[in-house]
Image 1: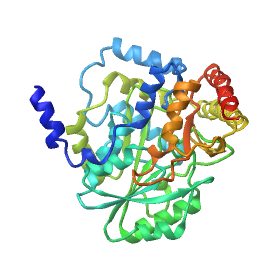
Image 2: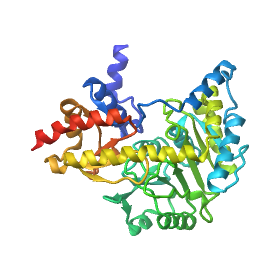
Image 3: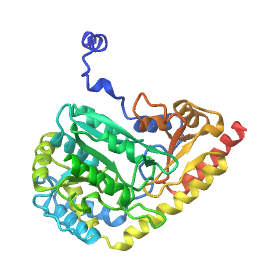
Image 4: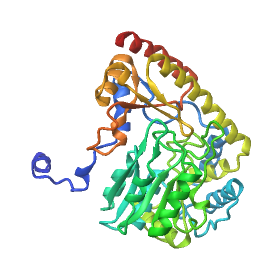
Length: 399
């Protein structure tokens, strides 16, 4: 066994694809947080209970013996509930029988979508900074990522740069709105340009909408698939994880045209067979929550956003105000640091607050994230206040 391990290390048994990206830095920071007993404001999972109604629905589903394989592409009850939700929220009718695929979280939904639609050598446009999985997913498909910069503090893109990124080699573009890590919500004007270019070059749009209901300051989420000409070429990837505070359930879904859905379902079947059956039953009940639930959710997170923004600015960070999702990007240069990874490790070990280094949201060769870190605020107020107390040490130490 030792000889096999030695050969693996020395002779390079790792695939060329696996060599092109690292393990998740976000998950690594959670391990570092645990090692130093630091408050985890790195990984985006709530530390408060999920809604009681969805938990009880899961208990009932298990006791009622929904414990065997569900239909590979999702229980009928969940697909029907998603279709009702889409009609209610956006006024669009979709067919749950041929336009929805339930996956093991949006993570699987994204990679299944790419594997189902992208060929080796195709180019896929990714906005940078990006959620760290996107680059790895594109590489695993054998495709070539093409990056377009989102410029702080508003994280807008340059129109000319985006236009230049499109070519006859472009197969798809990934749009994450509301955006992780920046909190940016793409405007109608920006989406119109993306749609125009997708139509011109016959490009698929993969829209990650996992934070669709976490919005602030009267900002509106506009699904790309609701724009003229985009219904059949947009693939929406979503999940119950963030909306219902159940990140460990791994229930996601992909919405697409019947033709694309057929391809996604084949890939999904051989990746994971299917998501957890009782949790699908419970998720279907959660989609029946009324409009007041979503309003309360946004208000709940707005209070935490405003509190943490105040705390961080008082401590000396330059913060980028998010309009969606539950993250804050902050500039560390006021503290005299230009190495985000070293600063993040210092924060965890010496200050007792874990964050994500900004460079993890940029391609390896980029230096644009070296002065940035990401905080998440999907936490109890007690957690955020404890972090604020610890950040007082940072202010004193740096001054």
